[in-house]
Length: 318
Image (cartoon, rainbow, N blue to C red; front, side, top):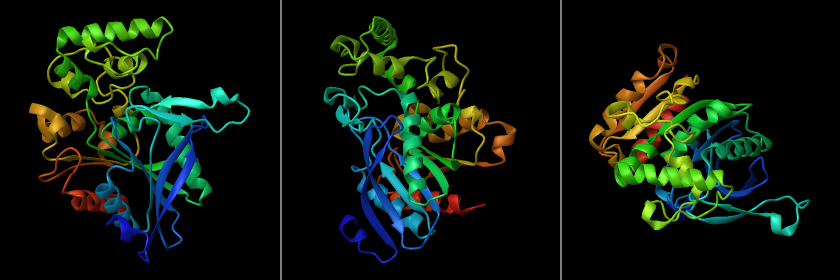
């Protein structure tokens, strides 16, 4: 699919570079229909050794599907792409040694997604697009929730939350209660001591995350904890209101899971959807839709076409 994509008469593919609002340089892919469309969607990838360039089947299929409805797609590597990645700050007023930024999931803070997303929106506006949609997968979906309550100017008309996850609950389950709280305490102490980039020791189970990112991910009262399925279905870990950011979304929103999402555990995708629906306001329910893709896992592998078509058709619906 990848090699012939740029040759299609109805769709062109370009490698692009954009700037986050703090001038961090980020690479991306721009899928453009040949029509003079003003509509474009932004795709946010998930956490881990991940990025827009490493899921060609899903991204190409989505780009092609959206193009059929005259919607462009920008899929870019945000500052959380890869586990560890050196990034460049495009600011010549800074000394050379200060033009480097250590990024990747092991150093990322989720609230910084605002800088990346706003940068993507500015890039698309400069390209002539005026009607924008924001879509995110896994932690990318959680970033939409974090973005919604922090963005000063939100240009997006609709959201797509694909497989929003509960990283706090997953780490609590994987680490076990004792080690989870030990790791959180250690990360908080290092961050408070002014050593946020300190690498977490192996015994915490969070190696090689930095202290700041480990704290960001583990803190049940922090910005990362947007979809607390574990807390909502089993036991509270923090005091933050459940689904606090998600409940404040007031734009048309599609929430979509793979029916066999392996990260939903015993709750399952249907259980996660029920919890999200429960914590959606009556006003928001009127403009929200909840779907699953039959037989699909968390990444919609081997079901990319069904996923892309559901997203395309939903965005087209007024």
